[in-house]
Length: 154
Image 1 (cartoon, one colour):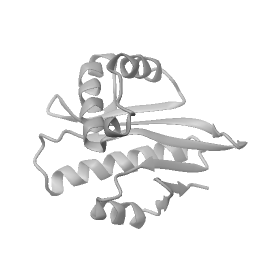
Image 2: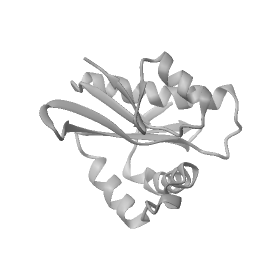
Image 3: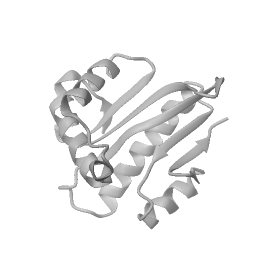
Image 4: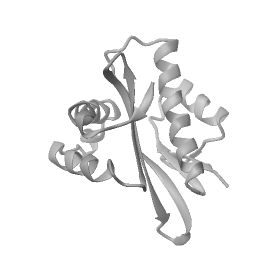
C-alpha cells in the first residue's frame, strides 16, 4: 500500500535516498547528496501541506518512496508547479511487473496529489537511457522537457 511517510520511516527514506542518488549517478556530476541535509529536508517536509512524502509499505517494510513539493514557477508566480524530488523503489526488489506497477503507482500518486492541490505543471527527473520508463511517462501525458519530463496539469 502507498501511505504517508512518518518520522519512523526516516531511516528507510534516507537509505532510499542514498540508493536513488547512486542509481541516478548524481554524485558523478558533483551533485552527491549529504545524508544530514536529506534528513533535515525530510523532517521539514513531513508536516508540510506543500509537500508529499509517501512510501510503499509491503508487509511493514518500506519498499519505495516518492517525494514532491509545490512551489511557484520562478519566472511567473501565478503558475504553481509540483516537482518530484525522489521517486524510487528498492533495487533489492526483484525486477518485474510487480515492481514496475508499484513504481508507476507512485508516479500516479504524485500526479494526483499535484492536481488536487491546483498545480499547473508537474515535473519529474528521469534517466534518459531508460526507454520503457520514457514510454510509460509519455503514455501518461508527461513529455520530455530538456533534462526533465513535465506534464501540464491544467
